[in-house]
Length: 370
Ligand code: IPM
Ligand code: MG
Image (cartoon, rainbow, N blue to C red; front, top):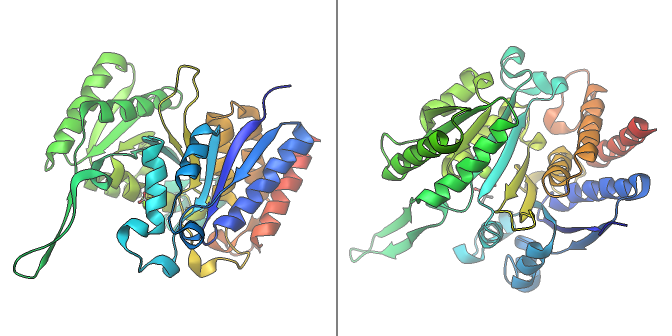
């Protein structure tokens, strides 16, 4: 018998517990129907952790996350905690876990499911078959650079400061991930930057170019200015295979790419650190969408981005590619069958709740493996 797969679940705030509930059912199915062993622990992050422990993330939780094979995170934040001081906000918990586990590579696949091509605000012919992998740098750049802060100036006014800085190794390690992924896909990397304005991005572009020449010259590398990239994503998204970007632009471009696929409610993500000697990488999986407090607790949220984040965990942290394929197939089939949560609802389709979407996935998994 192999060791059980250790999962740490951090449902978080807003719709987080509802979408995590549906993942738990998929995990139960894998246990009962497929014979896998999981060791599951659950903990708090974000606003709920602030309410219980007065901090958005406890040291114990970070430690448990480091020991897990994979961490699954729902979402953090909500209006209840908006007025807290900066360091206490729910989002700080998320940024801290990324930083403390050194999860520098954030993979955000923007995949347009066939059945959803009409749910996008763009024309079907532009988004159909879309398959872009965004690789966002996640532990550096403007989000973490020092100096940072808010100062009171002598004249009574204030100044807020953030620093954008990238060093050679920070760029190379994330670029390597992008090239390695491209090698398994269509062999193309587009790196987005503002090297026409920012020194940090002059270094970014030069280091990516250098790494490409040294180790990946069999792949196609192009550089694109980030503003043009935002435009090209709408104009002709099919030109992109792997899209590499820094922390800030990656955040923005991935929301944009998400809308191409029909809904932010469909987009999963994986955040990966460096592999150790045994090949194990610290890893966290979360949907790209947020905590959606306006619809929380109503059983209407789309659980698919969270379920697809779990399939990424099966793929990248558990080596269970076949099971990941199976679950993704179940998602495709359920969508092809016409079931939709509110966010992806289309005329002629059947609008269903979070739990009915979950039921249907489990039922389809049963059909697929009969
Ligand atoms: C994301 C989110 C986060 C980010 C927020 C919640 C801090 O927008 O994961 O894309 O900006 O990284
Ligand atoms: Mg974002």
